[in-house]
Image 1: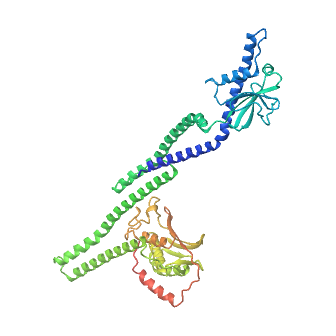
Image 2: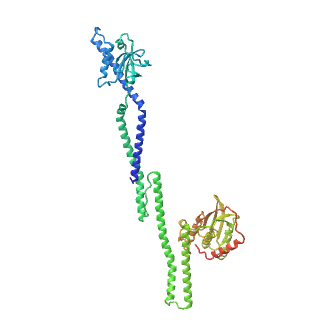
Image 3: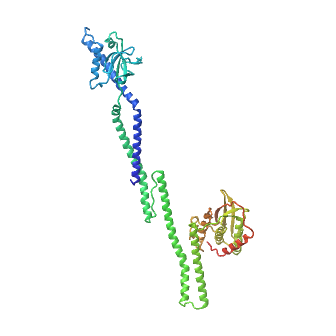
Length: 513
């Protein structure tokens, strides 16, 4: 019972059983009309046979008695017809044969339930009635209840056997078919049809359950393989739509798991590489001081400075990794407050003004006017610092770095930092925001390749997005969007210098991305 295929198959069986039960109930409710139809059909068949037998008996008596001295009476004719009905091959004992006159009264009867004088009320002989086309009727009796009957006009020869009684028609009557008779008639047909339907339904049910269960079993086997570390597993996208969606999402999940594992391996390799160089320097110079290889004070001072610089480098790397990890896990919350974008851009342009003069790279900042952002001032400044540091580092002397901002649809503001450097190859663009990634053309050769990864996490934490476009030989543009603010700017004149002073001090220790 634990198997999905077994459950589906049993569900199909229940549906089939309920459907057949409802069908049987519907047939039972419709059997009343069907019983009468069967009875009338039998009576019509018997009536035609009786009429033919009556004419045959009259012809045989006439041919046997050519002189005409012996005549066949009506009662004798009825007795002959009754004996004909009682033959096993022709009818049943409960079938009655009577002759009625033009008013519907019985003038002669060969029956245990109908007697002479009984009147068939409402019996009319239709002009369409004939020996081969009996007319249907009903009669109620005290002994047998309601009887079904058919009437046929008598031939002139048969009517003459009843003398002056004005015989008009012969009537064949019998009780309606019982429920057992109806079931006896229907049972073989229903049984055959039901068995055929059940066999077809079971076959289709097995195939349908197999079409659902088989892809899921493949997904289960692939999931066990992934759990054992085989991340290259893929399952065919087959079956119903929902199962195909599960297979598609499973393949996408395994690809993400494989990529995550590869990223983890790359991360461990890169962090090992990044830590190896400074730790080797620290170990080498400290060992040299300890074993007396460097004894002079200038040499010791130089070794101590190198050890301090390399230790600071390792500490900064660890801090950036922890900062990025906390951002990715959502442990760092960004303040959400309205700020003036023009104020942020003005501060950033002041910080990078000296670097613009030293490198000979023109810095242009488009002041957007009154434009509000919703976010953390310090973190957004970190985003612009990282992007501008990259832009200056990869723009040659005489080039230009440009910062622009504009409102876009759906309540967002778009900020673009572009340079006129060499550009980035198209194959490197999708990987720019991965940690420790360094482009083949030498971008990010300084630093650890964490700046853009941190930048992306900050922008995403604010509900925005960031991407890069580049054209070889014409420069690169980094574009990010942020949600627009909804309130007035409340930064006071006294608070602004203090915040700018704090930010200026923090920027002096900002590392390149």
